[in-house]
Length: 362
Image 1: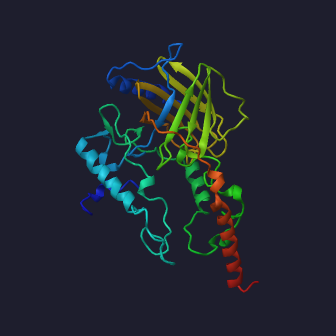
Image 2: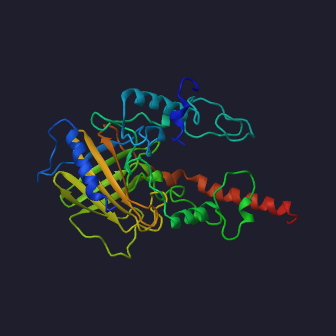
Image 3: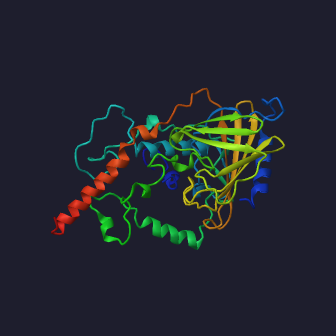
């Protein structure tokens, strides 16, 4: 126990083939909600239009202490929520008026030298955790353990090559010891989210996943087009209804999305991703099928299946609620204040110059 919180609860905090199964599960769960009238469009289709805040305290992967249990009890949910809050507070500050830290330090939370990031006000992790009258242990429900399936050998080797250029900042130009391009040689080598080109944590998707903040999404639906505006990075997904995918050589960061109806469920099929999709680890071979089901006048059930045979050994699926909100979706003007990208590159040049001097150069 630490501060009255069971520390075991913090251990894990730090597709096509499954489409039919996912649709069956989504339909069964949707049927478990209380029968309610839902808004419909003029042509009788469920009206998905509206603004939703998808922030949730449900973790993406299931904590191993739950085993194969897809749902938790209210007592377990309460303990898990307290553990999550304790975890966040240990890595952020709850004091909005904190002073700047002294120079130096090891960069750990509360230590000297750590300039800090967002305080807990900006991290609303107390959003919906329920699916009907059930409390899920994770967003992922397939595989049954609620965790990402194993990666392929090809994917593991690719990650090793990629992460050779990922290391904590120790104040030295350590990358000069490696052969080939360094991680700060070119702005285009930096992650897309860091460059304000795509929202991080696959908030833009697909699949569209919750993040620490900026979880508002707005859907505008017509008979032939569905637009999903994502607050994080102000990305907009355009879904063409009852259409065909573009040619295979046309590649997009958020893929090419086409939609169709299966009963009252809106199904969105997305292919044609670029080499760097928003979903971490995925490749241009990514295929995502999403299913939107309106369970009542103020809630959508969002279900998705991911398939990338060059990354994961099997497809995997997830599901969580999208509750409607009266909040407004504000523009996320990332580029207007993205001073960090230039400073990252400038800092790297300074460290490289220091390394040359230390080696006796000029």
